[in-house]
Length: 261
Image 1 (tube, helix red, strand yellow):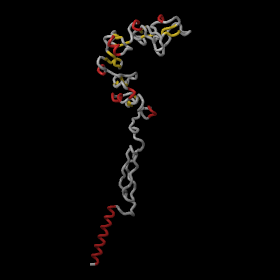
Image 2 (cartoon, one colour):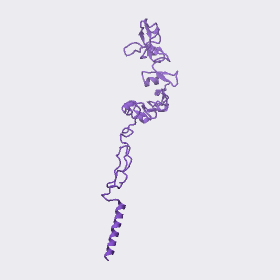
Image 3 (tube, helix red, strand yellow):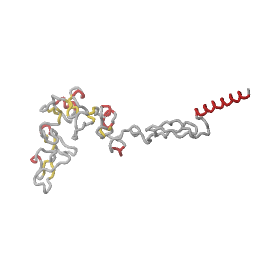
Image 4 (tube, one colour):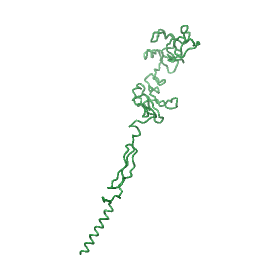
C-alpha cells in the first residue's frame, strides 16, 4: 500500500510539471516570450508595444511615425502660400486649388458666398481660362444672362441693363443716361455725341465737353479732348482724354497717360 501511494504522488507531481511548462507562468523563468504589443498610428505617433507576458521580452508591434497630422489641423498645404501652411483664410484668394498648387478666390459658388470681399459677385467662374491656361476660379457678378435680373444682360461678367431707349438708362443710373444701340445688346453710356457732354465738368470743375470716341480709352464718356485741336496751344491730348501741358522734349507727340484718366 505504501508503494502504491508513492507512485500516485509521483504521478501527480509529474502531471503538475507538464501543466506549468505548458502555461509558461513560472515567475523564475525569464526565457518565456511575451505577446506582441499593439502598434501606434501615424497620426498620433504611438510608442512600440510592450510585452504582455510576465518577464517576457517586448512585443514587435509596428511603431507609429508620430508628428503632426498631414493636413495641418484641417488646412491643406498649398505650395508656399502663407509661409507654406496654406491659403490665407482671411484673404481674397483663400481657397486652395490643390490640383494646380495655387490659391484662388473660389472653386464653387459656395466659396464666393462665404467670402465677404466678394459681396455682389456670387458666381464662381470655373469656365474661363487665364493666361496660364488654368480656370479663372474668380468670383463674378454673372457668367450668363440668366444670372442677371429682368431686362439685363451679362457683359464682361457684369450685369448690364439691356436698353432700347435713353429713358430706361436715365431711370436706372443718371450717370449713364444714354442708350447706345450701336452695339448689341444695347448699353447705357454717358454720351454718344459732344452735345450730350454740354455742361459736364470733372471733380475740379474742369469742363469735359467732348465725348470720347468708340475704341479709345474711356470710350463714350465726357472728357476734355479727343485730339490736340480740342486743347489750348502748348497742350497735348492724352490717351485718356485730358489736356496736359506738353513737356519740352515731347516732340509734339502725346504723352503716355498712366492713369488713363
